[in-house]
Image 1: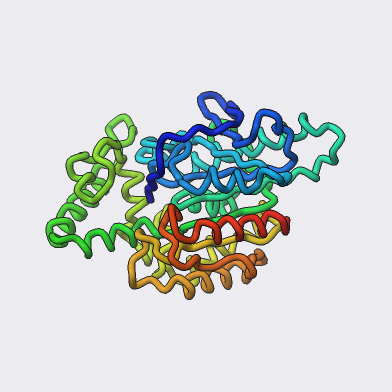
Image 2: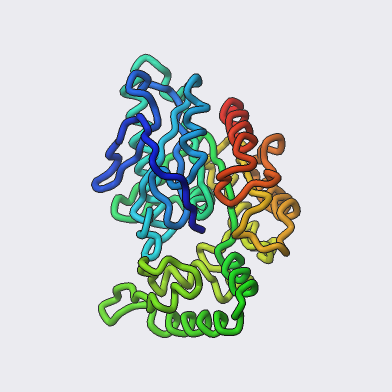
Length: 338
C-alpha cells in the first residue's frame, strides 16, 4: 500500500551507506550521533525518505531518549517495489541491521555487546517485510548467503492486505465490471507470461495496471503482481498475502505461528492497526483480525504486546492527522519496555 506526506521540510541527521547503492538516514542532531539504541523504519509501496508523515515526529519524540530512528531505503523503495520481492527486501534489511549493530558497537566500545537494542518498524507493505523477516526460513540466501541477524523488537503498523485493498477499489468503483475485466486480463497475462524467454521478469502493460490504481509511471512485473493480488487465495495465498482477513487458521500458523520457532526475536511484537485505514475494506473486523494473529503468534511460542497493540481510533493508513500522538505514545511505551 502506498503513502503520501507533506513537503518542504528539512531534517538534521546522518546518511549511512549500509551496503553498495543502499542507504539509511538517521534522524539525529549532529551533536547526538552516539545514541545506543536504534529503530529502523521500513515504508510501504512507493515510500522512501520522509513520505510517511509521522516518522520525523516519532524521531523528535525520541530526542531525549537513548533511541534514534533510521529510515531505510531498499531496492524496492519509491518505484522499485513493482519488480521487488519480500525475499530481497529482508535480505537488504538484514544487511542494514548488521551495519547498524556494528556501527553502534564502534560508537560505544565500552558498552556490553548485547546492550544496544535494534527494533524494526514496518508501515503498510513494510509490515509484510517485517513479518517475512521474522517467520521465513533463515538458512541464508541471496547474493550474500548470510542469515538474518536477530532483532530486539518489531512493530507492524497498518498491516493491511494488498489483495483485499484492491478488491475494495474494484467494488467501490463507479465501473466495477470494467475494472474486474481489467483485473482478469492482467491475471491471465501474468500467469501465461510471467517471464521472458531469457527468464527475465515480464512487465505488465502499464496502461492496464494504472486502471487498478497502481502508479501509472511504475513498472509492475507479472511475478510481483501475482504476489500482491494473490488470485489463488485464500486457499493458496501468495508470499505477499499475509494480512488478509479470510486466510485460514492453518495459514496463520505457517506465518505468525513460525515467529516463535524461528527465534529471530525474543521480545513481544507490537501491532498497530489504523481505525480509519482507507486501504482496509469496511467488511474487515480489525479487532477480531488482531485477535486471530495474536492467537497464532502465541500458539507458536511468540509473544504479543497486549498492552500497547490495538486499533488506533480515527487513524488513517499512514496516520497523517488523527491518532498520530496515540501512535507515537504506544511506540514509546513499547520501546521503553525493551
